[in-house]
Amino acid sequence: MTDAAVPVTQSAVETFTERYLRTLGCDIDKQGNRWTINAPDEVESELLTESLTLVCGDDVDDENAEPLYPESPFFQTLLTEASERTPSGKIAFQTEETDIQIPDWLRASEVEVRKTDFTPYYDRTAIVVLFQVSIETVSEYQSEFLKAVAVDTRSEDHLPALEQTFLEITSPDTEALITDQADITPSDVQPLLETAREQVVERAQDTIDEIHQEASRAADAEVEEFRQMQQQRIQEFEAQQSNLSEKIDDLSDRISSSDEDERVDALKERKELKTEYEDVDAELNDLRQRRDQGFPDRQREIRARHALDVRVKPRTITEVEYERGEIELKLATEEQDHTITVGYGSGVGVTETVRCESCGNPFSESLPLDTIEEGLWCEDCSSGVSD
Image (cartoon, rainbow, N blue to C red; front, side, top):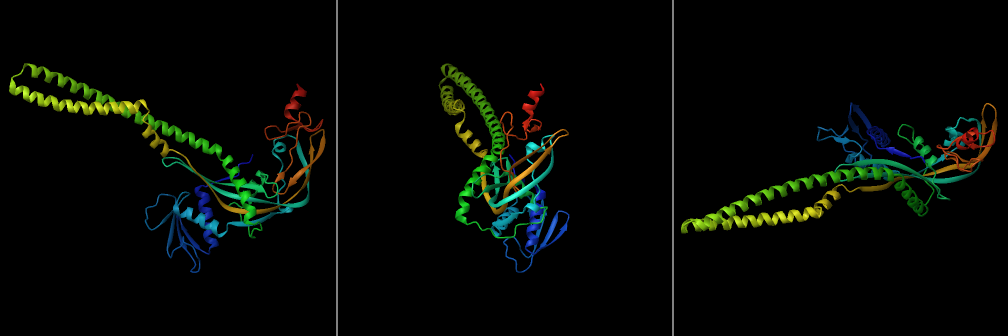
């Protein structure tokens, strides 16, 4: 499945910021990584002031300049403002303007696609939701990216190929094509948005699990470090307790063999040492008890700092019109040719599952078409015959 994700890199942040500020009518004077922004008087934006200087990166030595990097407050505010200005749009994928998408199981095959002929029958509508996904812990780890999810408005089917097409034609390096206002109503969008949200969380699960494992390892290491420190404290208290016990025993011997004045002083000193011994003993018992329980309070504190905070926020919704129909694929090898017709959508790709005519398994990138001599056969069936 295509993972239509856009890493929020420094380069992408700078490209997006420059494009957005220029759409507001700003002039940008670049001097290395330092940008001086001059905004028109009539522009309404909480980001823009009479004098605005951006420094690309997080190493800023000028308190009057705003740092520009993925997690910077300036960029986060800019992203929010941009999505609020244009939260939705509309785009149409026309057949003549969209490249034919050959399915993975054919691109991974040695069978040649000699000709393609797409016949559109009707128009369909989908929405593409661009989600901002943030995964972080309070302590160490942070990951942020944008994910596109495409859902057909009628069937609610996921359209992964459409997501990739959308990202390619709307990337910061291409001219924006979304100009029309979306026709779909908020009441129609809401259930589709929930479907898209479930999908984006499912697709981000591997990344979430990976960061969770890293955070868990960091938490385990911190817990173990704390346990060792407390074990060292226990040993120190045990040594202190042993030393006090020896001193108390020595004083007891002195008391039994001393004159009256010395005995009074020894009794007073022994009482003080016993009080100190009891304090150390209480502290030692408390430490041992917490150690035997695994230091639960400290563990909760440490693991809370390493707990993941996953936020999924829709930034834009784009209504996409595309054509559905059938595509005729003319396949050929040196000895044989074969023509198949399957469902297809402009910008969406093949919309039907094509199966091996021998074993019935669906073709995929990992199980590509291998031969057309006896029909459409996968490489597993083909190799079985040759063996």
